[in-house]
Length: 121
Image (tube, rainbow, N blue to C red; front, side, top):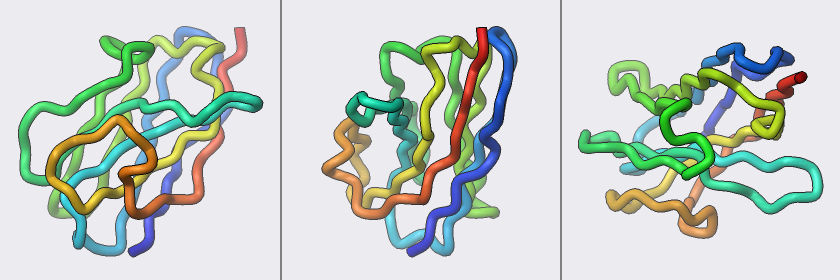
């Protein structure tokens, strides 16, 4: 299984970005986005099931970020609006065999390489 995250960049506060995560296949049932800033622990951002149902979000991004999927393209997206400097981090996509959505990084089976998002004030 290969996960490829892309779409990061340098933006200003208030701007938007859309991250993409391409997958080599779907031998797993749910996807998540996490982020890690320098010197901080990896933080849950959002998760979604390939089968449908409501996604879940971390408290710090709720109302600003939206996770979505394209089953035909085996891709998951993270639309990030109203970005803040504290959103600066490396963003990772991850895949999980279990259907139940999870906020815990340890429960994910596969990880992409990460894409840098930098938000200037």
